[in-house]
Image (cartoon, rainbow, N blue to C red; front, side, top):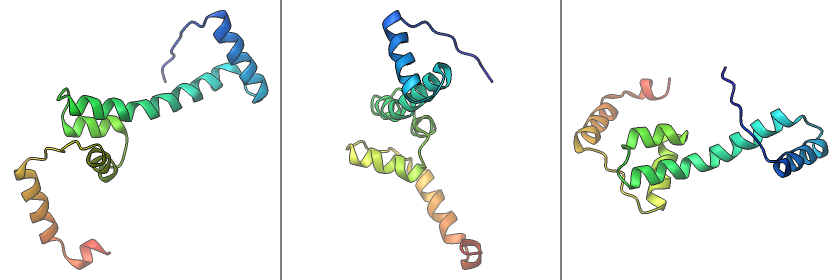
Length: 107
């Protein structure tokens, strides 16, 4: 486990304190919860943008997003971003799928 420390302005602290009181929580867990929710929603957008701008590859963008692969591909498609999957990989996936037996697919 790691510890992260950061500073708040007086106004930021007052807002955090008020919110913590209203939710019957202490400030550190509240700020952790809120920051992780913010990161989770932002990181998908960041992953998509980095991939779209060719800063990272498909696998790294998918891992960064934290989404299931099919959901990540669906997001790319909905944004009009072409998931450049090499033909060799597609061929390999097709061959693997063809080699599966019914018992392997439905144990």
